[in-house]
Image (cartoon, rainbow, N blue to C red):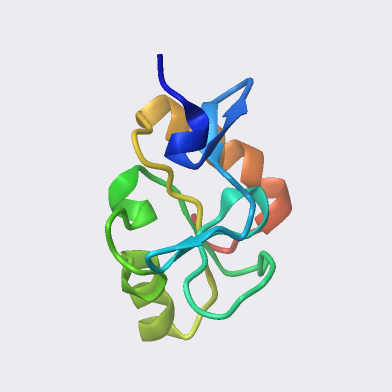
Amino acid sequence: MVNLDELKADFDPVLGWTNRASNQHEHGYTTIEHGVRKNFDETTIRPGGILAVGDSFTEGWEVKDHESWPAFLEKLTGVPVVNAGVGGYGTDQIILRAEQLLPIVRPKIL
């Protein structure tokens, strides 16, 4: 049986699990509300920009906050990018995660 505490995840009744929204900081990995991964110094979700959803590649598994592709996209475009990637997600979970966050993030681009 998987221990969600070891995975730094929280149970979600729709998605199965999400990243823990606890401002955890371990080896350059930090989350904010709704388990969104930080790119730089943001402390809250910044609406109106880009919402990136996906699996561990989007999340930036094994890289620091500023090294994920959503962080690079934000740096290149100057547009806030909300990194809502979660490791291990399949296509169905990615779509459901986007649907959960669309009314919160209100992105111009998904």
